[in-house]
Image 1 (cartoon, rainbow over the protein chains, first blue to last red):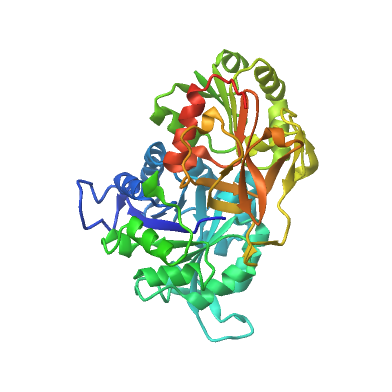
Image 2: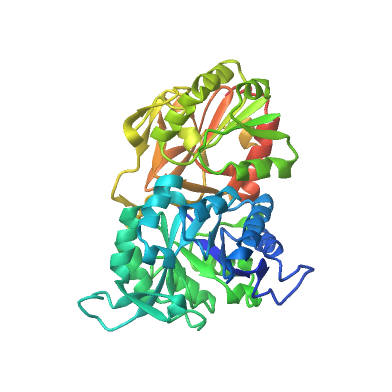
Length: 261
Length: 212
């Protein structure tokens, strides 16, 4: 039986992580490679790097980060942010990432999903979805709409329809981020997560809102997520990954016990 | 030197990084002489069976792999590289290398867990293995060990004699198979943390002999 995955997310700008770990040990909290190693050794099941570098001339820095991470950590990791073309995907994958995630680029040109899947295999194509709750309408029958630009721009695309379409196009996984819940630390968007997870047959990563262990528990059980993305609760040292996993195991969730290995 | 076979089948960098980390010298290559000279072979792969077999044939690597296997060189198949060593695959309905008798099947759909929850395909994430028989490459395997899988097809050897370990995802399927100096695993040891690194290390020092 599969374990549920715990996936720390690192935001990287110009080759530096933007939220540092506020605690312990002699690690450079601004260095994504050191942070990656730290979470790897703590027992993370996978990592997500989100490149928020604004200018395109600094993109090579991210490729270098990917290469260094791939040399040091031996769990899968994905890279998202600024990936718009098949060439962008190829560069990141050749540098050693397991997966690439596309978000607004897929909204602008949905064919990037099928092209990417054909070129590299579905297993490396993650669809990132930023979602906001809206009134139910003919256009948005699920009541959840895809947004871009950090939630500032509504696209008119229904989240459930979008998830199904992406699956059909060859996405291998969905990273489902609730803009409403993101940053609140008040819990994942359970209704949305369950809606998407039950209606596609590819894994769904819940994202946005984790503040405590019960939130993770609800996302991984009630909401049927296959994995949970976490950021602040580990970056700011509220919990270690081992603490999270041990607490979830005590509640009956299957987790990989990396600390025994 | 360990040859990591390069036939354009996806990310070889992580296999190479893992071997470097473990201190073994290796080459990512499709060069015939280099592969013949190597002391052992890692045969990775992601993607679809049809294209992989086409690419292998066009590079002449299908015969070379068979020769190396017949010569007793230790060979490790990973993921797609563990599938296309069988006789044939349901994926693209393609004839494969036939180093182990049997075939590659698609997971049945829909797939349900023991408590009737619908399971997803691909089988993606961390899962354990149930050892059927001991093998030098699996020396030191612990009950807590889990490995990173991502696949929609699974290997089904024609005989249990080839099955080394099983994994459960709705059905129980052979996740590690082997034949003499060949061992093949559906998961990615190079992406499976310490559990996977231990297996890679064992393989890199294995003499290729295997007696049950």
